[in-house]
Length: 137
Image (tube, rainbow, N blue to C red):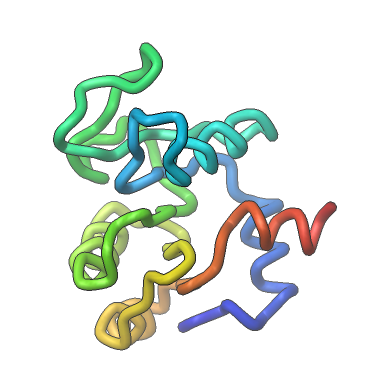
């Protein structure tokens, strides 16, 4: 179920979540995934980097897949192209994530169907930082 336009659901998700997996986390400071992950850490979220091509980012372990993360993930924040979103939704379902958040420009009707079938909230084509600042200051 796409909750992008449900401000209460998004606010509740952001205030009750503590662990975020950033799929497609880059090690390059100029990339949006790096900047958003840094922002999320700064405001108190535990952030896990997921990128099979990297072993660490800024001295922190980087995980190849969601299933490799050593604790339950609340939000899977996606910085991969839209064609990868359905499989990422499948992985999020498999690890019991509470929600999937696909950043600006990332959207997939197939991923939305899979999320809906699993009763997994999904936000597509929206920036988690922008929405958090808009809704919570």
